Image (tube, rainbow, N blue to C red; front, side):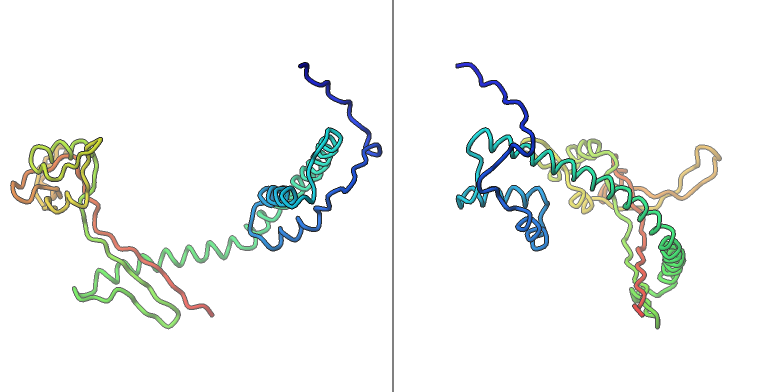
Length: 234
């Protein structure tokens, strides 16, 4: 059976559809009520109207009419999109001009307060408080101790196979968990000769707790303090 030849385009005033769907109002209402993408709302409304028998496309004339509605809507959408992009660029420039100085001021003082918070917490006794309350806000600190981290997982896996096989997990592949490896290693201080200057220098190493041999593939994440500045809202 041969395919049907496409019909020539019909002029707009020649297209007459009985029971033309009134979707403008429902779409506007759904856009206000639902936190959904516009495309999802259109599809949802189409399914609802088909299932309730309110409207569907049943012949070539209605199909062509629907195509023309898409073309008209696409033209309007493209026009609105261009206008939106133009205003968005202008609005972004305006916002940077008027709000940029405030953002930079916040960043300036936060940086200084974070630096002060790190120096303050280092000067506190072992039973130190974690926060510094002030009349205008709080400087909160969180200190993370130095810990071993993966630098080369395969090297750690090879070491574990040789020295601590219980650390190696195997199903379809083998792996080691850094949280388990940390129970078998420790961070120690050592003195070594600097290869460039020849002078002795302090180095930190990750070694096996029992043999004290360095563990390959592990590095050190140094102790660090995170500072959060929480100003009081006027």
